[in-house]
Length: 297
Image 1 (spheres, rainbow, N blue to C red):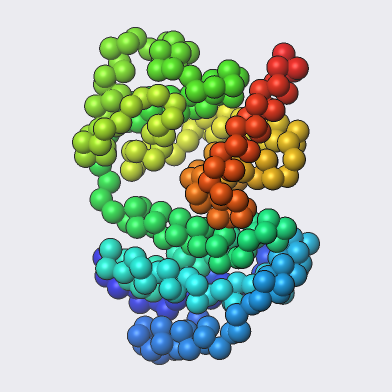
Image 2: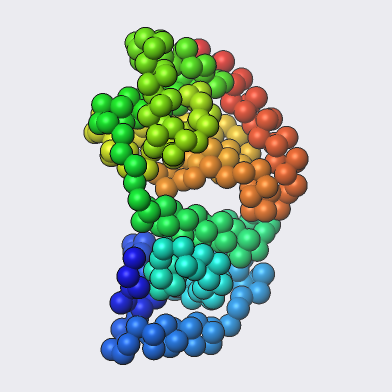
């Protein structure tokens, strides 16, 4: 990929903007990057108390606080972006994508969670950069009908997981879809070919969306089903306390369409708990949800 001719972006101060805007400096790309780095180094770092105060203001819709918090953490993006240099994207592009993750982290940061913003923001920044690196890489195509089957498999797996309160078996998903057992091997081969021989199973714990690089977009019907499932899950989470709900949202990627599942260790860093304690809370929260679903039947 050719190096980007645009300088690293600066987050906009309008609350509705999710992608930062570029610096307006009419000089070379190299000079723009140097100027950008000089500018962000002049912004003072925030103390823990300042982070909490700004975080509360951001939650209340304060655009100035949002801008302040973003600018104070632009150096964090640069330091992380440098770790991914020479992997197919220029440093400018890496910073741009990292800034998108930073904006999302600022908007989602919970000042009452008990952790520093850099710990929480690092995960979102890395996710944005990694996603960009994956998306710019070569895609391996699978037949259209098979991509459609994989997409349906994912949605049915999620729906059964919700209704049954556990991960469904391959046979249960296949029966729900009405497909014969011999089709399972075809699905496995399609997934393996798209991941260049990765050892993949078809149980619901696998996520075909992450395995097929160029899977087609959701159809309107699938999108409605997916969004309805998310709404029902979010409604169930209201029966939990705030910490339990937060852990399940992070664990299962329930923060909207951009949500990505996090490991127990990553969640522990966000909420300030050990990995084992996060595991215990996750288990207790799931047991609560099962009891709630049982009373609804």
